[in-house]
Image (tube, rainbow, N blue to C red; front, side):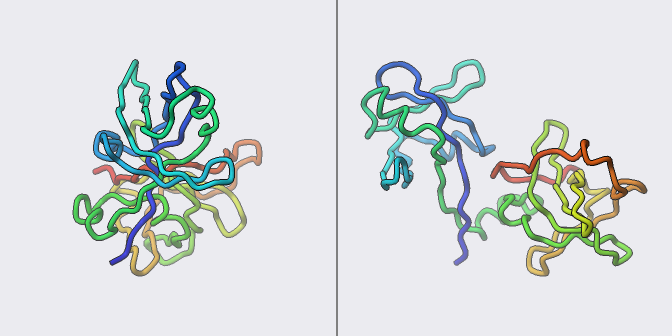
Length: 194
């Protein structure tokens, strides 16, 4: 059985005096991943800790969590920047949505044009409301954002390690260096739009 490490959230600032923290979500399934009793093994301040979700709440589209092991603001602040990661069964995740992949599954895949030309390598995924974008590093080290839509990405073959792409003309042409954006950082699954 193959497993994937999935980043559920990153702990943000302390909220209040009793150990509650704000979260930056990295999953599109927060209710499922951050349920009461969920356990996370983390490393904070150079030591391993177990964090058990005592309760969660949402306020103005922001998620907050209280852990059983965190009693005060000082302890909560020491967790700032820590990632909450879980291991999931890759086969079960693939069965739930065959057109969804975690960035860790896509990173490093070769991107090949439908005519056989090599276009580059997937460096990561950026999530936007309209669609997800594959960030592709071309052989000449340029950064290209390829929309993950059926028309432009007809096939993702994890076993073969290939993303088959049919991009419009000009998409993989060079841009001025100042238009190259930062490297992506997320672990929410990328979904192909139809």
